[in-house]
Length: 331
Image 1 (tube, one colour):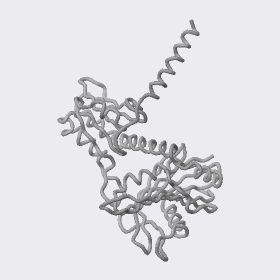
Image 2 (image 1 turned 45 degrees about the vertical axis):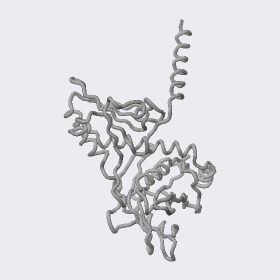
Image 3 (image 1 turned 180 degrees about the vertical axis):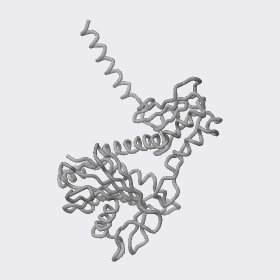
Image 4 (image 1 turned 90 degrees about the vertical axis):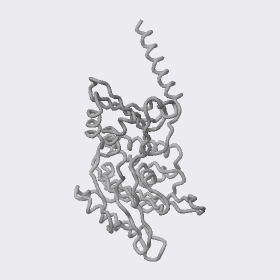
């Protein structure tokens, strides 16, 4: 009898895996979210609270760009076309229901994230959203970062990753067609150069990853003001611009860089977002960096991603390089 029960469990597990394998891939554009709620709710407290967080403008971008594009649809029209969307938020109002938030991965499609907001009234739902708005945005953003990392693992150049591991004892999952432009003892510059048509002309899109490291001495090395000084000294030496005497530096002419401490792979890290510019030139754009301590090799490691795309919006390109820097691992 026990063997029969065990067999049933094994068969059930295999069936679950098979069902997952047969699910179709997700649909929708990056950083897009489908919110399923009535038009009345969307026009009231619920809709305004969701937009307060998800339609907020992304910080440190040259142009105004919202964190997410929101598609609002009512339950009646939420059919198979929208059920496979990469990001879905369901609003479920039931009289007497206990307010709670539920997450489910791959409900209707592979790598999909579905969030269900349950409450007994519109007002209670709006309160729940307001109390958890920043966390909800973080969860959906992390889902986008993880999807991009998975894409890079599938299509990125394996020889580049192998070279980083062999020469520098670190692992990084990079984008397709990336290449190493500079590889010195403690500085690496990875580049991805593309062109995209707009207005009948081809325009340049540049994304880059800067990696540098130095011996770890004390926690003061992770002070943001010190990290910014180190960063500018590194780019001045190593990242030259197209004209004589030009080099990359952090822009302080407008909004200053923003920083926050984060938990990265169980350890302390500092994330910095800002704008870079090319000294003695007219180039510039957004960047995001991650600095943490590699305890295995007793060093401070910074990985930074930057974007140069003067004719285009930059949010999605910035998130792409964020996915690269947040694939950092040590072995």
